[in-house]
Length: 284
Image (cartoon, helix red, strand yellow):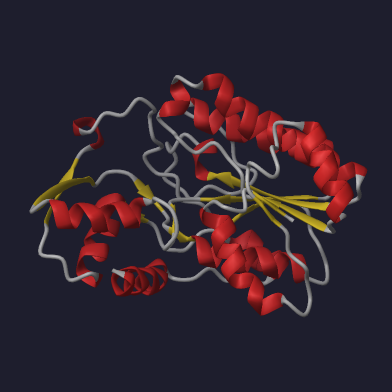
């Protein structure tokens, strides 16, 4: 069962589900079908479907808006997650929850490991961190996947936004001093299915993204190259592009643990990006 089934990751999981039709039955729940902030809504869906696994792809992801919509962010990203985790415990369901690199402050020069000190800079990161903690407290059979810079051919994301802006502008400034790892949501969906099918489950927090690290400017430059856009890109400092919510300057995550316990080797981000840009430009 997938909460947030109509979102970006949910759509990637739905696309992938045809490869697993003989092994699993899938139920994709939109927020209208499954309101994770309403425990009775969750109870009803669990009673009907009786899942073995619950994937939570539902989240409040408006990083800047969260600064002024504090209550809404915590309601979805913390209370809603706890509601799901508690239902999973009651119905003996394994819980897979998606979290974020924004639980870190980005001040480290080393890649963040799963047990490193967390210190979110804004409301979004704070709400996601509390969601992690509540999920692990509520259900011992919880896998938390922290990911970063998620994109795909679905929904609005950095890649789709860049492709749109490349058509509208001749020149574009992109932040060049924030470092992280782009992640194709299709690759994340594949990693989730590998965890579900793994013969020996290890619960707790894992990092998953593509690799290696890059900057938003380098990411945008590769999108321009792959889409053959004539746009002129200029690197700018974060200080030149102030946002309501502060961003971690370097939120690069170590990826060793998920490979050690689940045999999942993350893809190179440029290769994964190429597939998505090709798909999006073909669809135009």
